Image 1 (tube, rainbow, N blue to C red):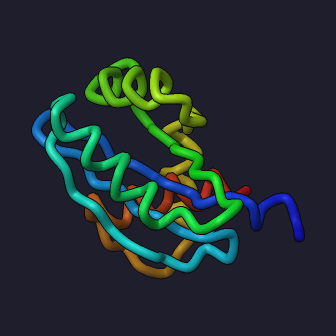
Image 2 (image 1 turned 90 degrees about the vertical axis):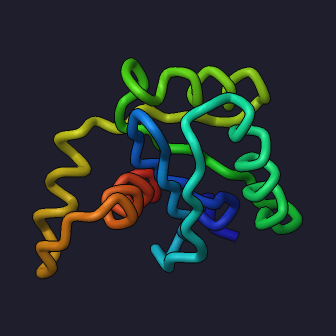
Length: 120
């Protein structure tokens, strides 16, 4: 099994009120989209949803674009619960969005672009 196949990639688009997460596999296939509130009481449910998706032997990796701003509490929560959290440079996800024919701008697409960066 290739190293990349051992993980689920969770890209999170961060906002003041809510976050949008998109989960993809190593082939960049979108598996699910989860919207949840930006408050610690919602983080545990989010993590449970991810755990339910994680098949035997797979480990989630979380990509957050804005660790210092709206994503700080989530990043801290995930880290405290033993999760792998990577900070994704906004310039990389911007370039990922621009590299596709679609010019859509949505929280879901932003989150998916963050997840695609993680795969690479």
